[in-house]
Length: 235
Image: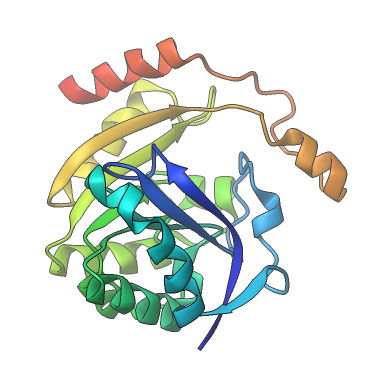
């Protein structure tokens, strides 16, 4: 089976427990206003590899990430947009005793329950707390996210929650209160992270000739994000 891969990172330190070999899948249907990797959107680009070729790349680094109780993280783009390939690759990881994680927005093409059978950890990017805000921020329909959420509830998979805090859009206390209610709808949540909005990917938009919709929004400090994260813990 052929998959489309954007790039790799052999020493990922923020993509799950331990040191991670991160595979960035090519292609995403969402158009998040703050996305810093617009070069991963196009499904027609990326390196074509088979699941066997990909696991061979991973196994070369296994002695390094295994020592730290690390593993492989499938990121993107959106790995759920290549479900058949993702399943075959995850199967090979489990066959080789490798811890598997998926870094996802929960917006894909189905086969979620099958994917989650071979997934040890889901790092879930919760984009917004309601359909209107979700559509405005990502261009997508929140119902697809809710379909993935239902699959997660059926699966006994550990979960990390991430949420990008954008000044004036997702940083109000009312929004965070609703986010808390969304998070309570999940199970096996081990970690919650609020990620401060930044504009580091703006140069890519200029290079690709794509308009950047948050030009007037200033980056949020890590300190402010940490304050909001503390609020999230007590509401």
